[in-house]
Length: 111
Image 1 (tube, rainbow, N blue to C red):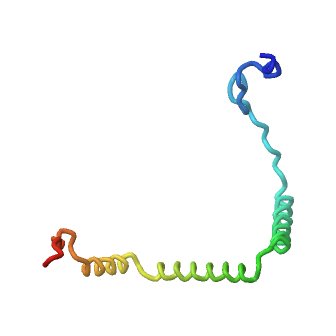
Image 2: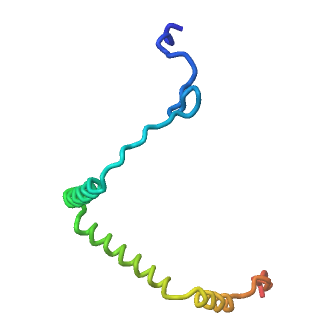
């Protein structure tokens, strides 16, 4: 039992909750709009610089990602080109070419 002498004893305490109920949190001070805009501009510039400096992709990887984006855009444009009504009509035409689900399938392979 000497191993557990250092263990703190007592009830569990939850963060943000006091003994009487929920603890009120401090409100953040409002900042001027100009300061916020300046910070946003600086953060955007920093992100752009980081992207330039941290881009360790090979030219093949960059070309691959560009092609993936291009194909994705083609898929989106293809799906957006038809209206819902046109898609339903195409689907119905496809279903007409299929056999009915209640058709009796051929079971005997001898005939």
